[in-house]
Amino acid sequence: MARWVRRVALVTGATRGIGAAITEALVRAGMTVVGVAPNVDKLESRTLDFRAAGHPGVLVPVACDVSSLEKVTELFAHIKSDPDLEGVDLCVNNAGIALAESFLTGDPKAFKTMFETNVLGSAYVAQESIKSMQERDVQDGHVIFINGLAGHRIIPGNKELHVYSSTKAAVTAMVEAVRLELRGMESRIRVSSISPGVVETDIYSRLFDGDEEKAKAFLAERKYLEANDVAEAVTYVISQPAHVQVHDILLRSTDQIP
Image (cartoon, rainbow, N blue to C red; front, side, top):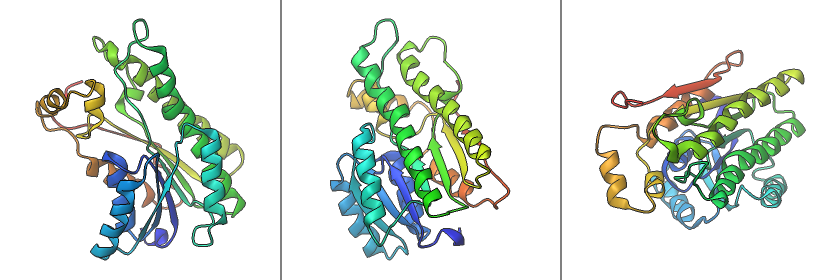
């Protein structure tokens, strides 16, 4: 991890859950982390917490809705113009929305929301990140997509996850497409995907229509992954030597069944 010290990472969806855990892990590793979320109030307080804890890195909160191309363009213009940042060396595409919708009976507006954030938002951020790396001749840049086991299979009998799973399947395809395009350019920039199963985060309260008790009951059924488990996978991916590209990590709790 020594080569990442004082370099710039961008983490989307940095406020909660997996994004918050990845942000802290990278700050602990000495990176300058641009933490992105639509609302950065919580990130502002975490900046003070990290400073008080004496972590070697720095958190720089920036508000941005990644589903908006205009806002993403403004985000990268801001990063480029800041002399303490100038560009992105590591991008962690984590922002995502999960809503309980099936294709035949679900709300098309919810379809649009998920595809705009999970697919288009990831594409916008990846494109701008790689452009930033190439403009500064960063040869060891890395783009990581936080995907999911949902992006690798559709579970029979769980139609409420069909639309969400389809957005993650698109991310699976995007990772390979970006990798092939980079190879076509003979670029040394790497791209990776991390695909966890169930992770103990607040995403499940949304899947259960805001029913916190139902979400807690589901997560209490067995021991699932924690956000820090995914953060450690990110650390593993970016710690590999230059000739090693970890294409995808599939991980689930030992107790998870499907």
